[in-house]
Length: 185
Image 1 (cartoon, one colour):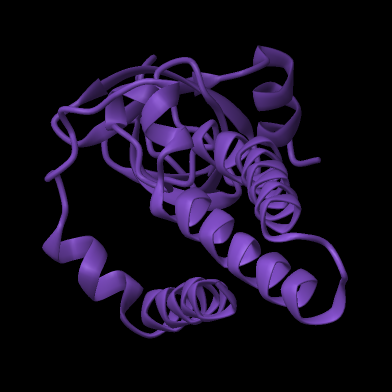
Image 2 (cartoon, helix red, strand yellow):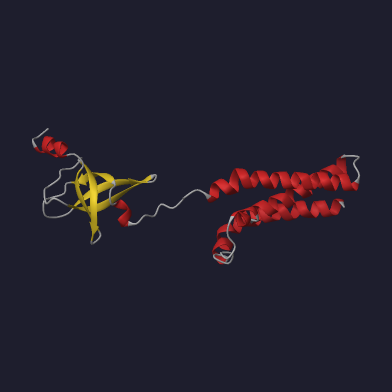
């Protein structure tokens, strides 16, 4: 039985090595293959959860059979308990929280409507300038035009009113801010 536990441990370690070395390649090759599976069951049956359980079961069974006086069935039961416990912990503490995160830095121009930004290159009354927006954890510069047809100097906070032809149409967030900067402050 010790050989079975050692095989499980070696299988888990090899899976971890293959995942680290070739994870992106395998992910791209298998992309979409398991999309028909959905829900929490899919996350609970992810290879990370399954193989971590196999690895822990193999390691615990090997150690217990080698260094304890327990019988074969007790060792098997303890190894299964350790595997299930570690799999549940990995699922609850890593897989489930990671499934709920959004790691995309992409956005749609339409998402900029209503967002507040700051003019980085002055926006003329008729023409284009540039506005800096904070999206998630990154900054993006977008071509901007004045919604009201009035020039907007650099440093003024603006709100996006509309997106048209790849440019954001912006208006000053506070009209008082625009007049103060125009007067030479």
